[in-house]
Image 1 (spheres, helix red, strand yellow):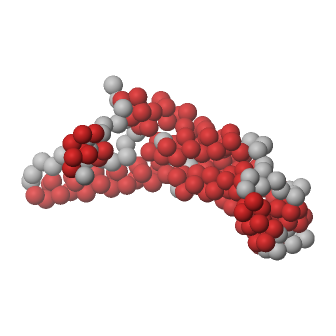
Image 2 (tube, helix red, strand yellow):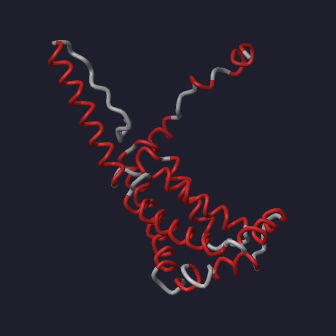
Image 3 (cartoon, one colour):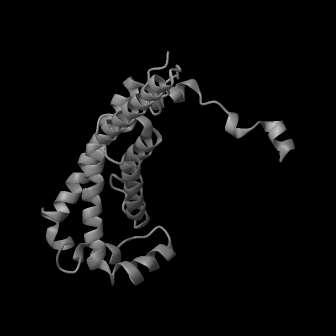
Length: 202
């Protein structure tokens, strides 16, 4: 193992490329990631609202999840084993699965739009999209997935304008205040180190 590390280097010591660092932490780029996050959240919100309160309500919250049952029964799955899963598990349990899908879309949309638990919301988004694509639905899934992956990759700044940003700012102020208090008590100058700060590298 040491010979391999000596030959190709230690992966833990590889530096982040300057351009990628800028994309992940820049305030200017953060505005783009936040706009993408809010847009994706609104799209999921619209889908969830349609299922919970709108035109799709009878097919999801009533009639034993007829919308999910019909979708699973007539889906064109990517793999035969996924088709077996749809017919043997999803169709018989379509009632509670329809409720799960409807409220999951609503929750993911609200979380992304508000910038709350952004990475977790992105993972939930990708999980739902995975099930849709595996069931043969293309639609806008690829576009949504691309946005979710970008938002997840830029998690440090994609929730900057939102609840995550407010919580991060509160945590940073608390850490700074704690350092200042410790410094004044001990009479020693301690540098304040802030984590997850949105920066604009020169």
